[in-house]
Length: 307
Ligand code: HEC
Image 1 (cartoon, rainbow, N blue to C red):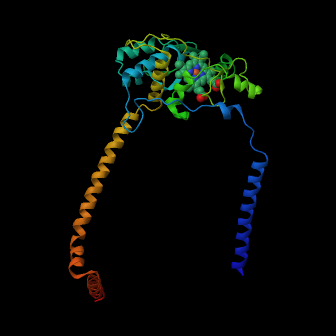
Image 2 (image 1 turned 90 degrees about the vertical axis):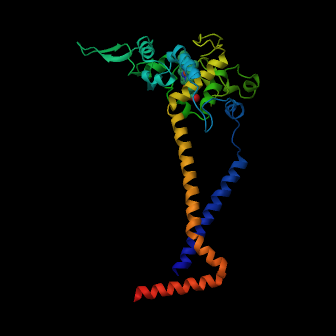
Image 3 (image 1 turned 30 degrees about the vertical axis):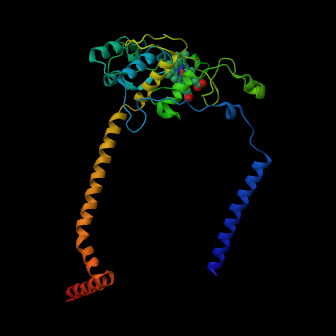
């Protein structure tokens, strides 16, 4: 009886699943989702190669230093890097006095407290400080940016699909809004104060194109500072800020794989060694004989245990 009831309950569940499945499909066919400008004009990140790509990826310190220079001279005006300290720059090959100087001359001071009055104040950065946000709080940040919040860039390479390729595409992707788009979706015209960029998920963002002219920064190593080069370098730098230990992780991973490989080979050889005798018996006497022998042996062992 219970079985029959269970059967019908199960049947009812399966029936419900089928009904909801087909009702939804019918609904989808009857009312197809509306086409949107995002759907049609959004582009995936460009194909671009970074030294840190792939299982053997590494950091190119020269490039990271150039990227840091772009961050410092362009992006830091609006974006903080509050998970990275000045002293972390040592990993890019900066010497301690250089780092001290960079912190000391940083355009934005860090929050502090007046030792005499206890009032909020600011002071010059030291190597132990994190790269400060240029705004005291979110309200101030939004007020200065058309109500949009410039995100902290420390983890942006991890936080956006496409990582460095996305940042690079975004920085080099600003363009005029295609006439076709406005013609087809008049409501999607880029609003006042926003900028059209097909790599941004909703096509219009509040960040004015930050890299606009060749030579906007003058690279210390003499590399030609084209917009493309600056975008690439700063994107590579943001991969480092998001995962400074990437190279160590890759090296450790590689060592572990080699270790496991050797372990597997040793394990296989040990297996061969241990079973060699048993296998030889099977080969000499044939499988049936070997089996009956094994059974006789087992029976003997059992008796031994019982007795
Ligand atoms: C004038 C201020 C300003 C400058 C300079 C600036 N940004 Fe931005 N940035 C913004 C604002 C505002 C947003 C938020 C845009 C939005 O949400 O519409 C933003 C957003 C971003 C985003 C996130 C986009 C997303 O997917 O949400 C990235 C990445 C970024 N900026 C990188 C940079 C880099 C790299 C530089 C330096 C080359 C830079 N920005 C310079 C104001 C600025």
